[in-house]
Image (tube, rainbow, N blue to C red; front, top):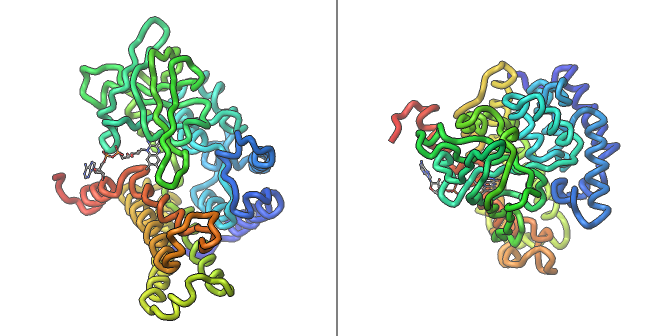
Amino acid sequence: MDWKDSADQAAFRAQVRQVIENKLPERYRAGDGDWERDRKSEDVRARDAATAWTAALAEQGWVAPHWPKEFGGAGLSPMEQFIFKQEMAQSGAPSVGGQGVSQLGPTLIVHGSDEQKAQHLPKILSGEVDWRQGYSEPGAGSDLASLQTRAIRDGDDYVINGQKIWTSLAHHADWLYVLTRTDPNAPKHRGISFLLVDKSTPGITVRPLIDMSFRHHFNEVFFEDVRVPASNRVGEENRGWYVGMTLLDYERSNITGAVANRRTLNKLMAYLGTPDGKAKSTLADNPGLRLEIADRAIETEVMFNYSFRIISMQARGLIPNYEASMSKLYNSELNQRTAHTGTKLFGLHSNVWPGDAHAAMEGEFTRTYVSSVSSTIAAGTSEIQRNIIATRGLGLPRG
Ligand SMILES: Cc1cc2nc3c(=O)[nH]c(=O)nc-3n(C[C@H](O)[C@H](O)[C@H](O)COP(=O)(O)OP(=O)(O)OC[C@H]3O[C@@H](n4cnc5c(N)ncnc54)[C@H](O)[C@@H]3O)c2cc1C
């Protein structure tokens, strides 16, 4: 692999940098705010920042970098997408469009009817409609095909009853894409249908689940006799498993994670050079901690190489499989190790939450120490990634 940009890639990188430099709202430059929450925030400055940034990306056609041009995407090559993501992550610029852009849109492009594409794709691109994923249930996570939420055909509608859980940001969503069981007698993967559900439909209740970093991110979603037009089914009845599993997120390289980790370490180094660097004495007394920081820096460079491996495969038209699991596993565990190193470094200061005068670096490491616990569970747990690496990568037999 050639590590340097070609002339065209360098020109594209410069163009992305320039748009970020000229158009990224101050709020995101300062590391505040998050597009998905800002979109519907009560704070008018937050809403304005989300709208302005969506407009700036839309002007370039970059809201959906990986969608084909005919559907309003940028049709970027895998390498250009990689450069785009890298530059966005480097500057802390949020991507826009949420799971509508990353997951539902590409699914509709492959499996949706012309009517479904015409109805939903433009509103995803404009940021008008936010989509969220209703897959997991209390008894169906890693073994998702065990899901029990029922959809029974009744005339031109399906009637849905059941419960979803861990539905990220469902409280901000306008629509949900939901896996439902339409044939309880079929083998479990073959009795599932993929439905598009307007969240304002009567019978839907969204209840918050507050996580251990005191954030409202997760929800439980209850469906009681929820009527959904049958025309909202994507693909054939009972073939929804294959629709739901269409691999949608092109960003499998985790480059955002590698860049974010490098940024965090750089910030840490800069802070240690300031007069109030709360970890200074610990660091001076403890060579082990100094070595630990060096380990994290080396591991971050290793993570970059995992990312480059994925992207070089995609650029050659190959579909990463166990290689994506390796990258996901390494990245999620690196997040946790980096947070752990930071909290050790700041000693007792790590026991206080952001906002407290005794917090080091505004409590950044305390917060990520708690929030990064979920990174080895979300999008497939570490055990599931290891199963994939063992069976598909190493060719070991299934247990
Ligand atoms: C931050 C975050 C965001 C999420 N957002 C969403 C969302 O928006 N929508 C949604 O539908 N879901 C969402 N989820 C749920 C997520 O998909 C599930 O938590 C995940 O699939 C694991 O399922 P589970 O929690 O039921 O754990 P389980 O599957 O019950 O697993 C419990 C433990 O058993 C292990 N285990 C399970 N099966 C095996 C096996 N075959 N071999 C070895 N070990 C095994 C697991 O690794 C884990 O340690 C989110 C989760 C997180 C953490």
